[in-house]
Image (spheres, rainbow, N blue to C red):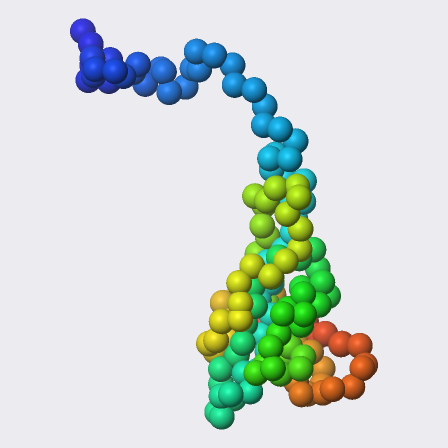
Length: 146
């Protein structure tokens, strides 16, 4: 007795999906995944200067190994309508499927909306968002009640 998967024209049945007839070569080194596993994804929030209510943020999605590198990359891409310094950073997760030659970079942004924390780790910068001094940024992690 043959089932529908065995008798379908041109099909090798379910077993053919799992047992390759020939060996496939390994991917070249430059296409292998996983060299930079553990890179984190951050949302870096700037105040949008054009919003009179102060409720809209300019947000950058950044892949970076740590908070400081994420802020540095986002500041490099900030435009004249964003505040000079970000006010909040959310760690939204960890990217685990990147190739070895992919490094830290801005993945998306700026996009404009009110920044909202969906339970992620959060840091807020001490000081005003429009500070133009050359002092280093000091970040405080915000502890949210569970």
